[in-house]
Amino acid sequence: MTPLQTIQWSWNEAVAPNQKISQQLKNSLIVVVGCGGTGSLVAQSLAGSGIGSFVLIDFDKVSINNLNRQFVFGVQDIGQYKADILAQRLMLNQKVVEAKSIISEITSSRQLAKLAKGADLIICCADEPKGAIQSYVANAAVQAGTSALFGAVGINNGIIGPLLKNRSSFQAYLRWIREVQSVCKKIIVPARFPSNGITNSIIANLMAW
Image (cartoon, rainbow, N blue to C red; front, side):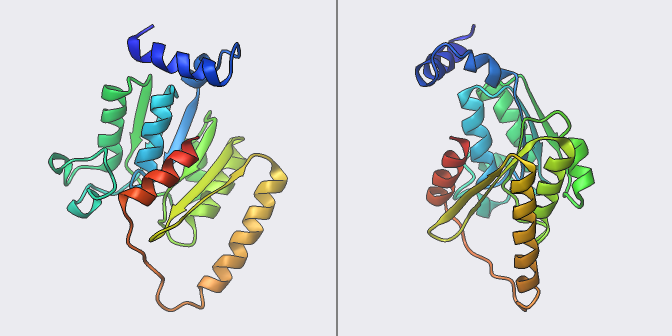
């Protein structure tokens, strides 16, 4: 057991004694959709807690305006794919078992379901494609037989959840998504909000918890 694993094991045992939770976490596979302000921090926190394997999905590259909140990246990473850099950092700093980067935009639930095969959880931290990514993630989780967690950040607030684990919760969420999409179609200019490291960190770490 490495020094880092010893620290992780001690904390996990304090939270859930005699449940072999550290080994369970090490054997877990998490899919993170969107490796920006929230997704990168969620992945770091989960890796630090002992999650062993990740699939990191994002098609975006690091830019200068990401650095106020996406702390895993530095100036030297500008122009490189976020998923690639995040995977490298998780392997280097948190010593995860595996971190696989997928440079792709999610365009269908079937596409994501294939990427999430065998996953214990899909975490949606993406906002593209607008109005569709949430339904893609929910449907993909159903197809892959896993759970899904959602999160989003605004100017000075954020949303954690829902965490979907059974068919009835997925069905209710998808109905709600369809209602939201019908309203959004009437909005001529989609709302866009700035984001900062404080709110991103709060929401990301609560999602990881």
